[in-house]
Image (cartoon, rainbow over all chains, first blue to last red; front, side, top):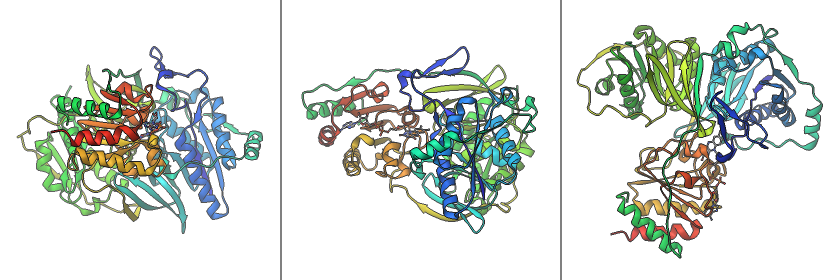
Length: 267
Length: 324
Ligand SMILES: Cc1cc2nc3c(=O)[nH]c(=O)nc-3n(C[C@H](O)[C@H](O)[C@H](O)COP(=O)(O)OP(=O)(O)OC[C@H]3O[C@@H](n4cnc5c(N)ncnc54)[C@H](O)[C@@H]3O)c2cc1C
């Protein structure tokens, strides 16, 4: 069995609001000083789901693929340290600056390049742009079925069985393989690599592929191929000022709050 | 420039969902002489067409086949494709619902076009559609234009106002094919949702966070909701509290949970991370109870109490009960 995990490196989504800045002239987020980028949380969870499947089967290979710049090696190494077998970095000037479409197209080309993939695991959305399209895009481009927002996945009798989160509970979906699954935080925290695994991962070589090797025409990927054009990126203004309840004791503060809410006709 | 707009409708208990009405109203504001169409799939679809016309649709593409009642993306995509073939839309609007999160990318990729997910506004900017959505967990907003057509957008619930007065124009109904085969089979289902008032519908939502320190503390949060009124207030939770297993996933408020827009949102021991605020910043009034005066929640709150919830919440329950 050959599983692929798609992994993205992103600015730390837990960056405090005060440290979050935007370069409005270039529509870019300015990396916060001293806060290193991280593996998008949901991608670590996707790796966890893939690892559980390989462990349950007692066999199988996991390849982690990242589209990004040189620094995305760190995200790949993190998934390798968790237990993935091989890493591929899709790094090429022509591949930079795209949208969800070009990202899915590039990843789908890499998956086709591998040839023997049985399932692809992605995070439910990248925690920077929060789009939630790439997994489904890969499925559509490859003509595979998909299940999104999974909290667990198993392979049973050659089918991919995914327990997914719905608005009012959970639903178990079975589909033929090859298939794409996206994973949500309901799966729980992904495993922590052991020190020895981190050292082993550090020594592993990551394969690099560029647009040409993937057979992609540069005009259809990266910035040139994007279909969604970012016109403006800005920080929304939160207006208003908080009124803190006065009082010596919690009782006095609580009474002041109840009275204020009554006066404003809210309660 | 006249444009045709297709709305992917959803039914709730056989009735037109309120979000579908919001999307249809958005459609009427952008058609500029074109037509607003809607797809309605599943039991009751035929009967819901009237409500869709009143909400702004000119055409309804319907199939009342019960095969559509369970959402399976490939069957729905097939039906929507059929409606797209007949209505030639310049834009397709879909709710950012569990179904919509799947349909948006699937339909866009199938039609060689782009989708903007979870939009809070779509505007006509000199003839060009521009969609705005939040990103970076709600810390930023991005406005996009579309290089390809049709423009596909999933729209956040309650971000659009429905029509003020129902439209009385009536409309055409077109039958769509029934649900064909699906590659996915739903083999199990487990309901996990609080009974009674749902957080999306409640006029008051009282939410607890990781700062409660203990799952049992949700009882006090529930007690406050009861004191406000079981018919008015529902209980929500931050993702940190849900991830700890303290409260059901169905009650999670935020970017990856539910979006709520109550008259009153009470955040107890919640820091106010951008991803949490993404689910409650549309509330009319936010009240924060937090012992850290620097907590981000106070920047969004209208009223606040800096203090230990263990003292403040019981006192607030008393104070609410003593009103009148
Ligand atoms: C991609 C992504 C998606 C996410 N989606 C969501 C989402 O949908 N919903 C969501 O909620 N989060 C979401 N998060 C997580 C979010 O970033 C925060 O981690 C989370 O909201 C924090 O929850 P919290 O406020 O309960 O906990 P904390 O941030 O730990 O805050 C606890 C608060 O409790 C206060 N406190 C502690 N003790 C007391 C006391 N005795 N009395 C009063 N106050 C006290 C503290 O001062 C603190 O402010 C997401 C994160 C990512 C990266």
